[in-house]
Image (spheres, rainbow, N blue to C red):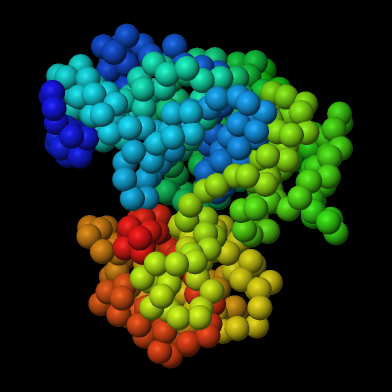
Length: 424
């Protein structure tokens, strides 16, 4: 594997995918053992599961820890433009040379045995993070929790479960209870768990699992609260009351994410600088990201342009709520989604705030929902819509028909990644 670049090795890893997926961690444990069990050599781990807000909460915790001089690694997925984004070592994407070396080592250690792409690349991330000094590792669950490839750390410092809603039902179950049970699988004995705002059924499942594991609970509306006030946000728990600026990440839903981040940080430090850094310095692309320049923005002219990768009903509701608070300009969506998602559930909250939806297929994505099907779903829920053959055809139509509107490009992280790549 010497002298091969990371893209070549990643493509080779794709060929190892099992013909039949068995929902266990056996392949992961086997590879980690061959690598010398690097999961046992990681810095202190903060493990984050949930449906919505994982990435934003992670970014806020990381910003808070960095603000007080602590070093952090982070593992997130999926990437937007390049795989390197998934593995961040001390606030930097992993370097190409190191990534290629780590991937090659994992590929060789696996001995061409069947393994999923996410499993082998998660092992690579763990190996890389175990070999570089840091104070904390922030580990984001890829899918579910109980059987996710990240769920191999026996004694994390802290676990976090963000709000749970319906998503990935084909893998996790078709009820909130079943999905919550999978998410709660990251809870470990005696390890504190921070719980975000939950549906009552989700909370019951999560709290029962925590009780079973004797894990101390720090839950929204019981142990901690957060709310918007005139000059910012107010966080409170039984030991702490702190006023902070509003989160620099856009959207009212980020206040809840900030609450989870502060509740987590409060388990690790009492420094106000950490709390303030969390809300004021976090960065997380494709989460109501304001695009200010580039060819797509230029083509749209004077429009305010945002980009968001949310793709489930809860994300749709949060985004629609935010758009409803903005200026009175016409609001247009440029939307592309995967065929595995609840398209009607995602789009329904937009029906009263959006003037038009330009439906597109996600370029080079085999699982994209065809543009005409997205347009059909939008029309069924009362949103005026047309389908377009490319991103730029949709952009040009919006630019001509709605020259001074606000535009949200949305529906999928895969589309968001494509937009960021093409808008450079």
